[in-house]
Amino acid sequence: MSEETFCHFHEDIPTRLSCVSCGKSICPKCMIEAAVGFKCPDCTRASKSHIEEITPRNYVIGGLSGLIIGTGAGYIWYQLSVYGILISLAVAYAVGFCVSKAISYSIGNKIGLKIQVFAGIITFISLMYNPIVILSFMTTGVFPSFFLILAAMSMWCSSCIIKLLALVIAVWAAVRHFRI
Image 1 (tube, helix red, strand yellow):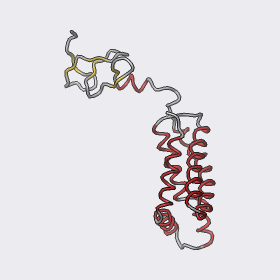
Image 2 (tube, helix red, strand yellow):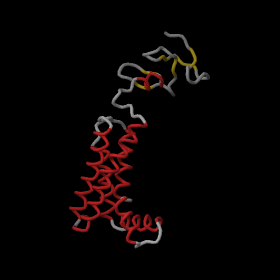
Image 3 (cartoon, one colour):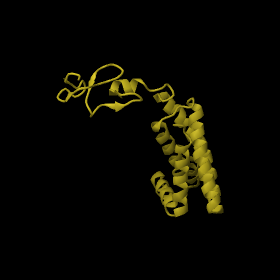
Image 4 (cartoon, one colour):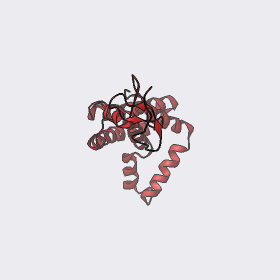
């Protein structure tokens, strides 16, 4: 039986567990299950694959490419959503797919939960607050202020269950198309 020590991360908790990689004492609060045994938080963070490491530069490049593609595809959705439920939902799915692929290809096919959430946010912005639609409202003078445009777009997208469903489908498609 191993001797009782104190957790490396929580000095007040006695334990008999240790990390399989580095040997540091760990307690049940900080132990993370590995393929064989348990690892400490430091070794778990260090064991991330290069494909899961996303830098701020990746977020900028992926965000710009996703927003450019999403803006164009979202504008197409705005124009085609009046032609029926199936067209609206199919185009919304295509918007999410296009945004996820644009982000994925531009950052080198990185994966992970954070980039999935990021793609979902970009897709939501592309549909709900499409920059082309905002610009067209601003240039035509339909609404006197930018905030009224945002309020009108929010009301337009949330006023119909089909549009809300289209938003959900688009975000789901963007999140779904990243490999985990």
